[in-house]
Length: 266
Image (cartoon, rainbow, N blue to C red; front, side):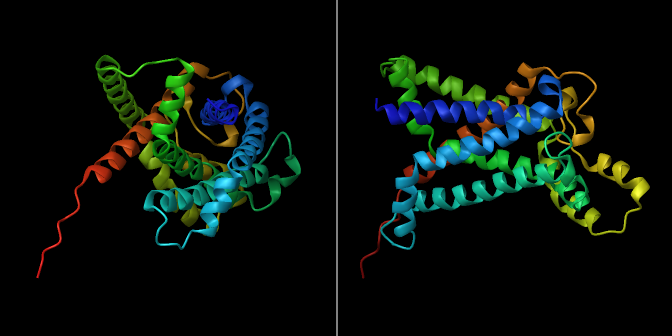
């Protein structure tokens, strides 16, 4: 296996693990960890792009070439969306920072704080789809790392594991009110457009910040009050990402398997 692929795989694993920890502000003590890791992920994400820069350039040059496979074009557009959502999440986090950049807190915090609690869930979906599109590449590298030989037993075991991941992801989506968290985006926008009295600002946003089991929430008001169960947070959001990735991979396989309609001769 090429060293560059090993580096990419390791970097991706680190990014995903750290990314899941950002979905509970109480992890490892509170906001200090949350804000530092958020900036760290931004830096790692840029390294990820630089490691794949040749691919980015080649696809950009051929983006409107009809011979470019649809999967590559779709993946490119998905990556653009992921870049924007990640950037917006980091920027909105800076605008409501209370530890690293407290001076930004007064810059239209209503808008940034409301959307910062919802946009990351869109990013979560995009990350899951991104991993799903690269699932075969990831599994191929993992087989080489652990020296796993292909066999019928391994194939059956892989299908069982994938089914369990999909099941876990579905359970976590339901238990964390994942869908309602994404739906909060439009709610937060409408709330921010209204005139809100300064006294009631925090109360209003507390109603709009999504909550889940173990007190999972992204609002910056709950950075104190004890630590969260780190393992539980990782399992919860890895389950969601994994479920989306497996689902994406399954849909991709079905599209590839779908036979083309034979052309009728006149």
